[in-house]
Figure 1 (cartoon, rainbow over the protein chains, first blue to last red):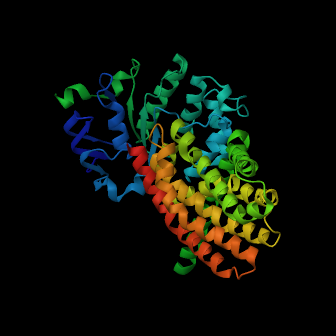
Figure 2 (figure 1 turned 90 degrees about the vertical axis):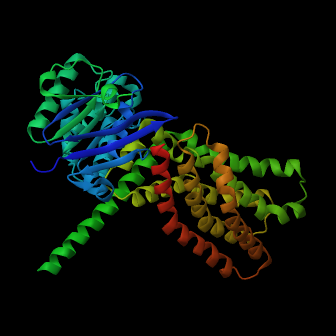
Figure 3 (figure 1 turned 90 degrees about the horizontal axis):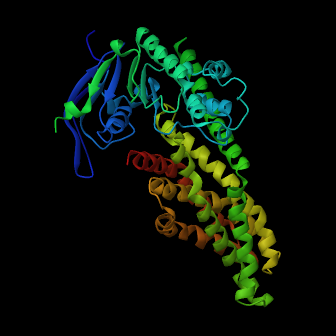
Length: 211
Length: 239
């Protein structure tokens, strides 16, 4: 393994005159599952938004496969799946329509796998009900169905288990482990106690920021 | 052989851009269709202005005929502006805008499709409703074609420019007022040439010059505005 998948050097970020982290350096290799920890407000979401390229409020350098990320944005986005605080599900569309739109935005996804993916996240039978009639957990499951569809290598998941039941959490944990075994990488934040904690690398922002 | 390969690649790339454009357009039209209040709001506003104006100013046919081009155009402009704030708002709130920005697809095409869908739901119905307002305001029959054509070419520009303002303010809690301030100065040329075209049609003067100017503004907007909208969206989401 010569170059790390994602490498971060001297990352600095402040919010409202409060330094969230400075001189943050780490590298992430293919096949790792990384859990970012930290108390509320320690900048976990901010870090994930910076890594995914949504936020530009940082100083420092980020390298994707050894190249400066700003130069290879398109390649990076092709390999990225981001799951944010807002699940990215339109309330007045059905789960199937939501995923069809996502498939249109990501050319690697095949439209005919969508009903299978919905089946796998336990939404069979709900394909045609608008998402605002579904529960909060089901809405997040619609978004998590993307994990079954995507070809992306890097998964960035911000609190993916909120409002998901225990069985669902266990399934998703297994998916992450399988993804890592196939050579993929997962970066996630969660306050859940993960059953797979021996197979993941932890990453505590409170300690790393050192302030 | 190599030539053939690149040709094939370029045709598939073209096909995927078209299918992306179509997918975004279809989704936005479906969203508008399922949420009809957003659809009728600008139209009702448009109709209200034309109804209330004679009551408030003067019901004299001669006077109304004189001001009709300006009133219809100003009403169309404000109705478009009214509908602008919602263009990216719901996408921003439920996170689909984040997903859009993170997709490898060209944002230019996505934004263009979204603005086209918005225009089909605001500018196009306004254009079809305009003759009714013209009749209500005693606009001479010769002016009708000029009114419709100028709105048909002018309202897409209004949507494109308004979308820049909407993209810049989508990250703010209350962006409504700010949009007006940002966008109104840019609307003024469209308004001037649009009303001039209608007045010229009423008096029987040649129209081609006005339409050429409106068309030129639209062409410039089609090429430049999506770039500005895309950049503005990235800034708004980054904040």
